[in-house]
Length: 93
Image 1: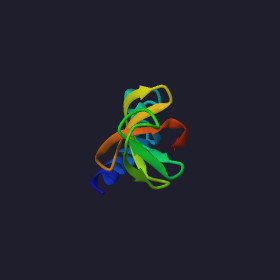
Image 2 (image 1 turned 90 degrees about the vertical axis):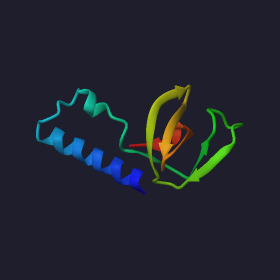
Image 3 (image 1 turned 180 degrees about the vertical axis):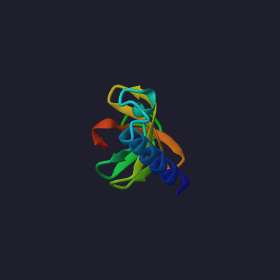
Image 4 (image 1 turned 90 degrees about the horizontal axis):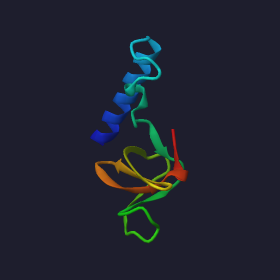
């Protein structure tokens, strides 16, 4: 729960700061990974393949934070304080 709150607060802060002109739109702060959600029920996997073990199932609309690691269309994310891999086709902002 704390991860959701922190991600939501950071995203809201960055949006407000951009609106007020405190953060330029092309700055590193605007390129943060906050604000990603699952577009459907989705398996969080132990690796970037459908053959990797399922660590947990994320509900549609679950907040995830990409770590920056990618393998083809697979992204490593932090979901409720647990890292794993999801297919990027099922993530939305």
